[in-house]
Length: 188
View 1 (cartoon, helix red, strand yellow):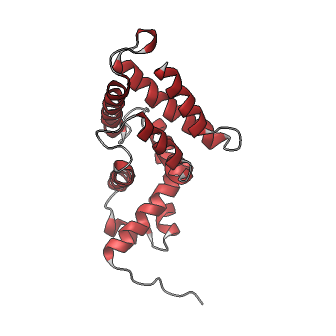
View 2 (tube, rainbow, N blue to C red):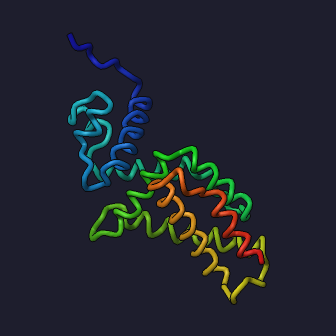
């Protein structure tokens, strides 16, 4: 005998759906994910899920907002390179969140992906934060004639690249150590 799904307050149910959507998007990407798969994870019908999120695009938008809310504390506007190292270390405790971000970011480069504007703007903003962190910590004398903007873009690339490698081979890739080594190169 199956038991009926317990009724949860709407905000709690929304949170449960968003957590399940993060998992499904991480596993299957946006195009491979279905509302039915998300609904099944939380014990709802697809119609029941549509009561909370009227479309797959609306669900994606909320997942991305949630991901940014979870990270907002990690990227304060006035953070320095040492704070970024702590972000990298913190991410090792959140493989599911890192995977969902990595999959959705890579997925978003495809034509007409609904998250493309989100990731374009997010990367623009993160590069600016990184450039400012470099400016604050290292001043104007950067190695190899780098500009602050180039160094910011490199920091983002290193962080994202390390995350991808870590997801593929977590026993071999030490994100925090590798990021610390890259920052040491910038400080020379």
